[in-house]
Amino acid sequence: KDQGLKDVFEDSFYIGVALNSRQVAPEATQEFELISTHFNSLSPENGLKWALVHPQPETYNFEFGDEYVAMGEKLGAFTIGHCLIWHQQVPNWVFENESGEMLDKDALISRMEAHIETVMGRYKGKIKGWDVVNEAFNEDGSFRESKWYKIAGKDFIKAAFRKANEVDPEAELYYNDYNVWRASKRKGILDFVKEMKAEGIRITAIGMQGHYTVNGPSIEEIEQGILDIYEAGFKVAITELDVDVLPRPRNSEGADLNINYANSPEFNPYKDGITPEGKAQLANRYGEIFKLFEKHKDKINRVTFWGLYDGRSWLNNFPVRGRTNYPLPIDRDMKLKEDVFNSI
Ligand code: XIL
Image 1 (spheres, rainbow, N blue to C red):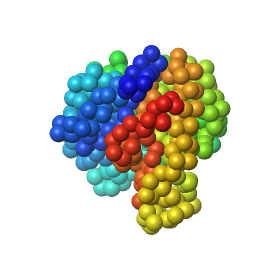
Image 2: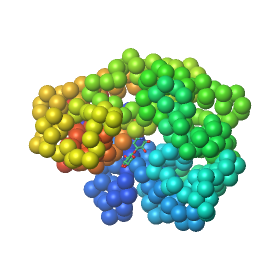
Image 3: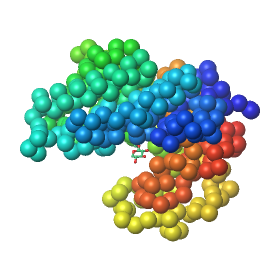
Image 4: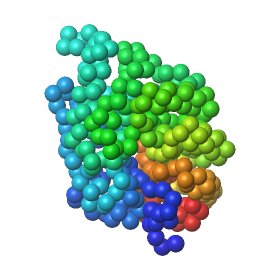
């Protein structure tokens, strides 16, 4: 196979990549070459999140977004927006009035709608699909007690989708979350999106983020997720795929986030390079994951990797800082991993 990743899956689904500001800069020619060879869909890793695009009440910062969208047009890529409403990377002022008091529900929803109108409206017709709401559920399927939820209840989700549909009726609209393979969480999500649909609120697909590890979740768990979403009447988007190869203190509960883990033999075992066993494990894992996606290509519209190459992956600093991770199909030297490529 001497083609790019996108060519291998041409008849199945888009192959996307999340980009940071350095990678969308016009002078990043090596990155551009890599992106154009392998990907036909783009996602913005951070630059369109509220804190970056709208840091102050009267300040919108569209530098990244404009370059990002221009790159998408140059490539003819299916360009994604991420994300309109989330509990992270959102400034505190969003939830407060000028005296620092909590907004009431109506005021918060109006502010949210104005944000959606401005950000989504600017890229109407250019950004083809949006993560409208990100990570609004807990692992047990209940609503996450975010500031959004505490102030506005579940209506903030409905209002966000209604507004997004109004701003760009042609754009695909997604609800996006991690651990959608977990039955309890998925049930909460699907019950709610079905309720939205019954009320006439448009929603195209459910985003399964796909932050996996070499050990889990199981292929059966991921498959059940795909089947249940499709059965509920939605397409599936794999929105943030990567495979952590390191043993992780999984939740920040178990890990001391104040230390840098670079010199931890336990949690940073591949500091000076990944072992042949580690490489094989990664290639096998990608192989089984893509075999599953291929099997369900009629249900999946896109598979997006969360980062362009290993050296730029967020997993070097999540869930703990300072590690050397190898989660993507492109290595630190910006070369495609042949063994991963051959196994998918
Ligand atoms: C991550 C980015 O990759 C990091 O650079 C940033 O510091 C934190 O956010 N779920 C999401 C993404 O929906 O937006 C997150 O991206 C990863 C988890």
